Amino acid sequence: MLGLDLTFLNWDIIRKFVLGGFYFSVQLTIVATIGGILFGTVLALMRLSGKKLLMVPATIYVNGMRSVPLVMVILWFFLLVPGWLYAYLPDGQNHRAEYSAYITFIAFEAAYFSEIMRAGIQSIPRGQVFAGQALGMTYSQNMKLIVLPQAFRNMLPVLLTQTIILFQDTSLVYAIGAYDLLKGFSNAGKIYGRPEEAYLLAAVVYFVICFALSWLVKRLQAKIAIVR
Image 1 (tube, rainbow, N blue to C red):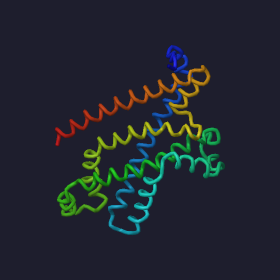
Image 2 (cartoon, one colour; image 1 turned 60 degrees about the vertical axis):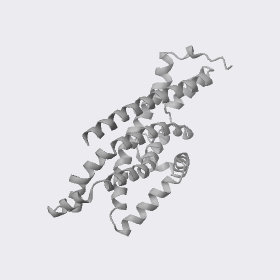
Image 3 (cartoon, rainbow, N blue to C red; image 1 turned 120 degrees about the horizontal axis):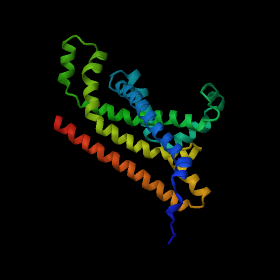
Image 4 (cartoon, helix red, strand yellow; image 1 turned 45 degrees about the horizontal axis):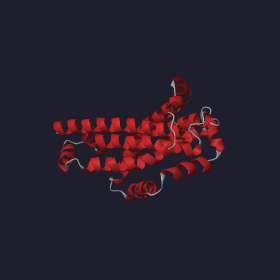
């Protein structure tokens, strides 16, 4: 028996160690989701354009990113990008790990969001595309006004599920020293001599958050199915 003592974790410890990491994990999730969806949509449109000049680089990027573990991409970017580049960012030298996490997650998650968006775009009946063309719409107008709004609605549950996975993956920034939720629990456990309890509580917090979000996604998916 480990003799776990969970009473050491009080509000002062949570406020001092955990909340800052939690805020960063949530912020990283939101930024990476928005950036990943925007960049991923561009990649999806490139792959569906029918032009090799656009299709080939987008395909190589997506397949390449999806074939490499995220933690390796995080480490590569953090270690290989010259440190002087961060001098152009606000307080970049002191927040190199955090900036690396933002850029890496957007670049990596875009490959996964791209595949989701590509499937969503392809799920729209071709008749609607042809109808838009018959009305004189250009390719960009067709995508903006007809295809993409429906694709986003169809893929919303899958996009949100990927976002939950993204939140779980934010714990990997621990490898480069970024102060995330897991890092906050880890620091509290080390300082107060309760590493087992700290990691156990971290697992419980991740489980509760992700389980609650998954339940909300299922409810949303059921509502979208009824609308259809």
